[in-house]
Amino acid sequence: MSETRVLMGKIQALRQRLEQAQGLANEARSAAAALVEESGGERRLPAFEQLVEDSHQHDAQLDSVVRPRTAVIRHDEAHGLPRQLTSRARRCLEHGRNLLLHLRQLADAFDPSEGSETPPLFDRRDPLARLYRETIALTDTALRMTLLFPESASAQLRLCEGLEAILNVVAARQMTLSAGVERQRQEVGRVTRLAELLTALDRGEAVDKQPFLALAEDILTDAQECGPLRFLEGDPRRPAHFAACHDLTTARIVGRVIRHDPELRGRPLDALLAALVHDVGMLRIPPEILAYPEPFDDNQRRIVEAHCHVGVSVAAPLLLDAPWLAEVIVGHHERLDGTGYPDGLRDFQIKPLTRLLAVCDVYAALCTRRSHRPARETRTALTDTLLLAEQGQLDRHYAECLLHLSFYPVGSVVELADGAVGVVVATPQPRRDLNSPARPVVALLMDGQGQPLPLPHHVDLAQCDSPSIVRTLSAAESRQLLGGRFPEWV
Image (cartoon, rainbow, N blue to C red; front, top):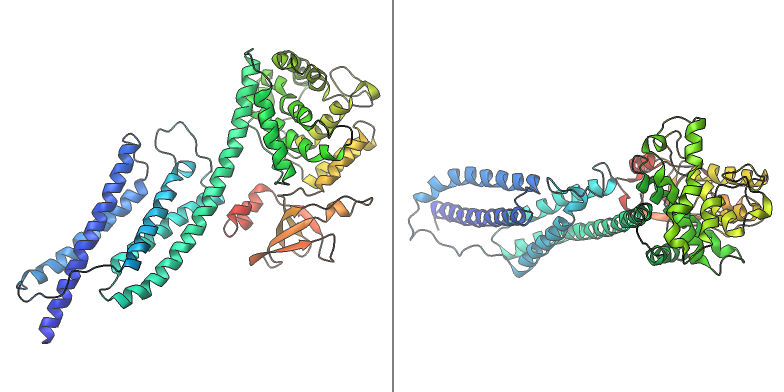
């Protein structure tokens, strides 16, 4: 065979591959058009469409170079079979397309369509949002590799090994993203559901306790499964959202400590119901007071303190089936030494459930940022709560029950004395000394030099001589240090 014939054969093969590439580009463009049509004409994935357009321009440029050369080849001189993918390569392509479809279904959580009234679940700076963008780009790159597959079946098989490895990484990331989106949707759903229930009470609508009890059962299950304790930050410009976030955080703390009280652990749902509605009176506080960036003056303080009595009147529909709720709602800011509000009750005038809720309410508030102050570290918040009990303001027994959370509750991102960073995954049973709550079980994610570990390294600080915890990292620090390598942990 002459060199000219060999060259013409290669050019013809290249032409055939170009036509197949053009077909794939058209198919991708059709899929994008269908996606736009499904969303009511809105352009949901402009970046994806731009990639398709860039691919079309690249194909057109390549075609302008190849076509003049193949045009002079006579039909009888062209030989070679049309290019075909092996079955393994086709399976890779189909797998990639399915992964891309699943990723597109998560688009609303990270980048909702234009004009959508539903805000994204994740800020663009969130580690999962960054992981989503990287995974989309990785999937697109992997699918474009199929356009470069050679004619040879053996060569295709070799390339498939690398392509399958990339798609396996994409599949693992897609599972992480799906789990993260589902967890966030559940979290947002709980806050939204409770805010709607509290708003309905505030409007005087007939609301029974069953929706609250369903939410309480969900919280109790999470506590029994030792899930991470998350402190929710409410928006003070939206009183219902602000109250719902605080009530949910308080209820989660109650669900984790009530099992350790012999008197109240037999009625956990009652305690959780009280926690979920105890601050309903906050809906009557003007947003400008909740968002006030300085400590309250006397007039603002009186308005805030009135939310206890107001809450009883707002929660009236619930009191028909649970009259004991009135005492908890009105008294959760009372103090054993008589310094609380609104009625200045003392000692045994305050019932056990109200005492428990007062302790959990204080701890939840200290661990959460407010307009006039930052959030305190969990260790500082627990220490301050114990100090209030030592001074006679809070019930000492219930304050010490918080030690079961440890100074660093499950889910806290902590830094050790040697610079290593990890996540608390379990807490020890408290002993008589205060060292035990300070030494939980930690999954180390970064070493002392700030390098990510290939796999989490679990350390029980209470059972070994490892360095102690020196501080809890803020949410911003956690995202910065761990977001790139361990987005699912933050």
